[in-house]
Image (cartoon, rainbow, N blue to C red; front, side, top):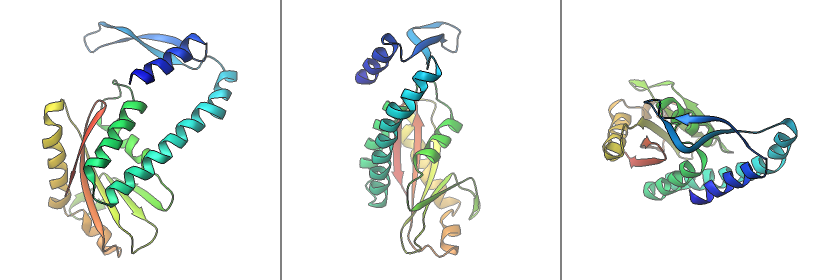
Length: 199
């Protein structure tokens, strides 16, 4: 995170970012040394598109492939470490609401060879996210996301999310489509942290 701050400071002081506004907490009090930054003009945006975003896309691609690989190997604690690193380097503390994490995960999980579906009916309810391989004999992944109100309940709410996958029989929809190998994970989020529980 310190390196992230150094990068943003460098981009700010060299003119590749500019301050748009101050940032305030829920009570309306200004947060010290925290600002909303924007790209200053189209010319600089072109540099971002050609250099910075290509680097970020490659970073995300490597992390995504490793993350999915750890889930497929059912090494959820290693996957958790990867996701915490991605969250630390990719999001703001103020993107802290359930729909944000849901959308973030859908975008992050889009990988070659897989289709990502969300909020479809399956079993006895609607699942959050499915990562479905194009090959029928490969393993499919179901993910149920929870947004935790504080760090203390991360583990419990992750476990609750995993239980929901089983309780609502979300796996059945994939099995009906011919996927014999289906695994599931509950993931809870609080700010830049997550906790993952395997069903």
